Structure formats: C-alpha cells, structure tokens
Length: 457
Image 1 (tube, rainbow, N blue to C red):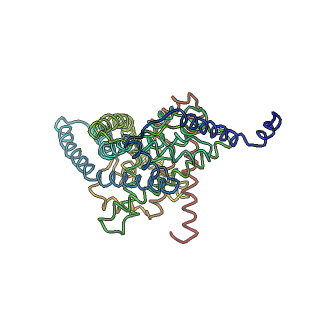
Image 2 (cartoon, rainbow, N blue to C red):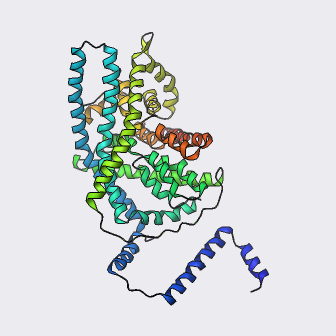
C-alpha cells in the first residue's frame, strides 16, 4: 500500500476511529511479541482474577452487579445508622439539659443561651448525630470494596459510558468519592490527566448525593415513599428509592457531561488505560480503622466548622423582628410564590439557602421555620416529624420534589471553595453553582406541573 492510499484511508476515518484503531493494533502487536518471547505459569490468584473478571466486567452482568452492590451498601448504611443516630441525638439532648441548667444558674441572658445553646450547640450536635453514624458505616464499607479490588472494575465498566458522553472513565472513581463528600471528590479529580475531562468531573460531581444530603433523602424516603409498607420492609423500600435517586443523578451526570462536551468543553475523550489489580482479601481491621477514624473524623470536623456559624445565623434571623414578624418570616414571604411553582414552599427554599454552608442543617432549619420556635428544633420520633410536614400541606409530590431539589441543587460552601482552589477560576466556580441550580429548578417544576396535569394533587 503506497503512502497516498494510507493517507486516503486515514482521512476517511474519523479521528476517534483512527485513534481506536491505532491503540488496538498497538496492543495486538504487543500481545503477539509478548506471547512469542515470554512464558509464565498462571498462579491460582491469576486464574481466580480472570474468572471473577468474566463476571464483574461482563457487558451483561457488570452493571446489574454494580447496582446491586450499591443497594447493599445503602441498605447496610440505612439499617445500621438509625439506632446510633437516635442514641447520639438522645445523648446530646441529655447534655443540653445540663448546659441550660448552668446558664440558668449563672443568670445568663436569654439571647446568650439562644445563640450558644439553641443555635450553636443544637446545630453542631445535629450535624454530628446525623452524619457520624452513616459515615462510620459507609466509608469502611466502600473502603473494603476498594481494598478487595472491585472499584477499579467499576471504573472499567463505566469507561464505556463516559466515553460516549465525551468524559473519562476515571470520573467514576471521583463519583464514588462523592458519595462520602463532594468536596473531597473535587480534590480527587486530580487523578484525571486531561484538563478538559477533569473540569467535566468537577462540574458534574455534585449530582452524586454526598453524606450531608443523605439525612434529608433517607428521612423523606422513609416517611413518604415507604410509608405504607410493613416496618420490616421499610429499610428495603427506602434503599430502592435511594438507588433510584442515585441512578437518576448518574443519568443527569451523563447528560450534563455530554452537553458540556458539545458546548463549553468541546473535545475528544482520551483513552483510559487501567491495569486491573488482582483480587485480594481485604485487610479488615486496618481498612475499617483508617476509614472510620481518618476519613469520617476529617469530614465531620469540616462540616461542624461550617454548620456552627450557619446555625447561629439562623437563630439570629429567626429572633430579630421587624414589626411583629421575624426576619425569617419576611424572607419566607418573598420566596413563597416562586417556591410554589416548584411544588415547594418558602420555608423549604429558605432552608436550602441557609443550608449553603452545610447541607446537614436543612432539615432542622426547616423545622425551626415551620414550628416558629426561633430555635433549631429536635423531634422525638419520625411519626411526629411526618405530622409536622402534613400539617404544612405536604404530599408525596412535595417530598419527592424536596428530594430532587436536594439531589440536584448547588454544591455546599466547602465544595464551592474547593472548586475554586482546584480551577483557580471564578468563571468555572460560578458555572459549578449555576448548572445544578438551574436543574434543581427545572426538574421539580416539570414534576409538579405534570402531577397537576395528571390530577395526582
């Protein structure tokens, strides 16, 4: 074949086809050379790895196993976190009684008790009781899968889908990190070599629900989506709802990645070469201790640092009055007409706005507004909590839209700060805020208006 024929054939191919063809022949020739010159005996580990990879990386079984594995992790987290969360909440409530008694004994002014106890203390302890138990279960479970060697197989499977939307397979690993903390996931995007694909991972990572949003999603799924099933099946139904939400978030990730790769971040996806490690027995003690103590503690401390000032601010605006109405009530009045178009209300929207520093305080801020207590409110059980929502006119559509808004809305303050540090760009940080905010408005609006047309509400 002469040079002109080679040129004509190459020109006829697309750049992506040509690149794939070159890589294919490189690997094919490398394998031929290796087979001709190197001989080795496969160990039991090699044979075991090959057999397991035929299942875990199978085009047929790979994705169902991934979804099932995700469901198992969520189920363990949900079922295991309920009791310790309740115990922590009861413990902090018990301690609060002694703190209040101390303030009364020293004749501290009411405003000081309100700011430090009803605002700062309750806000911080709510974050701890809501976040710590799920993190202490989720992080070690996920770390065990990583230690076993399964997570690289997830990246291998997802690479095919990410390439179709112009992104990189390693983005699946940053998404996995996002289930624990989106801020940490933004930092983990450094593993992606291409600046364009790294930016795609940063801009879309927010569509994976972080630990701060799990509390809201789990509570609402339990109260409204799993309300009419037997108590023994509630964790299973709640898990199914959460898996559905996560899958929807992944679909949104693919859609936004595809849209950005065709507009603001045009380009061709780079190849993902990944050496799959052999499967190995996880080091249970080392993995669990490292994940529970190191990761959980780091994320928790950062969340408390952000949540504490937000809780104080919330108490202040709820207790400063203009006329006979608090500043919080005035803000609710401004937001309510717009929120109603999304199937929400002004209290819900304000709770998410005040929850910008930390998603964990959205529910307590919402309860504070509904009950007009002027303090972050603790509810003794889920039955009372559901009744509060129903008294405010909530339906299952309201709960669904709150969950969708929570899933899609702008990143928390810590994540936005990390995005700015990683990108060094105010423009991309603004887009990281704008894109999910727009989707968080559009999707609930469509759901609510469709429900009205269908006569569901």
